[in-house]
Length: 196
Ligand SMILES: CC(C)(COP(=O)(O)OP(=O)(O)OC[C@H]1O[C@@H](n2cnc3c(N)ncnc32)[C@H](O)[C@@H]1OP(=O)(O)O)[C@@H](O)C(=O)NCCC(=O)NCCS
Image (tube, rainbow, N blue to C red; front, side, top):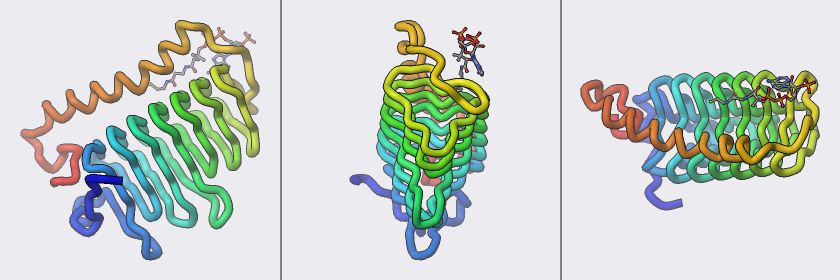
């Protein structure tokens, strides 16, 4: 990955932490809002955003996050030790307070607010996990479907409008990053970059 920020310079901000000899590897374009915490064996690619108080904890396994993905406020991304990493693709939206644990989220999926995706589950590309869903361990879902409920089940294929809405999630968050960066210079400690 190019344009990597050295973790040592970020420790003071309280956003990036080395753990067990491994430091997060984060592209310089990534927006880290105040209160975000990124720990250990984590790679976050170009254009991503990690919002207020989200936690990405790659302490006992790895976390990988592809380009232009957004991890919204209070989301928790974790792993199971020596067993289940968490792999998140490109242009994924992870909604507020969602929990992703030792699972795989394919490109362009949307994880609804407060949804929980458990170990070894695989969410197909462009699929929508409804708000509040609980995806059981090992569940595999195809591309482009709605997954909802507790425990979550595949409800149906997404409509064209819903596919558009899911794709727009990632686009919208790229715009929000620009907006935040234009608003926040008056408060440099809250800039959402590594520089402060
Ligand atoms: C799924 C969603 C898009 C709405 O779907 P919808 O228009 O209500 O879908 P439908 O009317 O076709 O519902 C299909 C079925 O799924 C159920 N369903 C819809 N949303 C559900 C949810 N969140 N949890 C449980 N069941 C849900 C409906 O009750 C319906 O069940 P039924 O056929 O037994 O009546 C919406 O509920 C949602 O979860 N959006 C996620 C938004 C989000 O969190 N974004 C990220 C932050 S920006």
